[in-house]
Image (cartoon, rainbow, N blue to C red; front, side):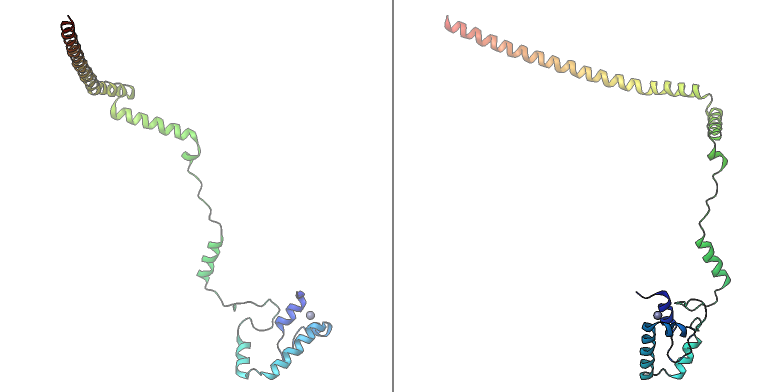
Length: 184
Ligand SMILES: [Zn+2]
């Protein structure tokens, strides 16, 4: 793992150029060896002069005091900068309205609703009573009719059962009589 000073020296080092951190090269044998190897390689593969000047012209590539950026620092349009700032800010939720924060408002709202309903349909208690009465009128006869029909059917089934038993009994009785007569 390189020390931060060594890493900075190797990042800033350009073969053949005056480095502002030559003091580090003189004091650090590892970085001196690195710089010598880089200079040997640069002599073997010389950079074309045109490309060298182009690389120097890239913004941020100049050996300045600040840290090197991966992306060249280009001026940003003001509108885009503002939008990016707004995106980074936490959105502030608008405060809840007063009627949602206080239960007194909810009570008042339900009372108002009751009053409005009462004004529309009359007294709510009376309206409820009338609803019950109308339900009674509509539903009770049907229920009673259903019960009566079930009862009627049950009575009829019971009668059928009774007659069937009576028939069976009669038949048994008849056959017993026949048996008695035969035995006598
Ligand atoms: Zn070093």
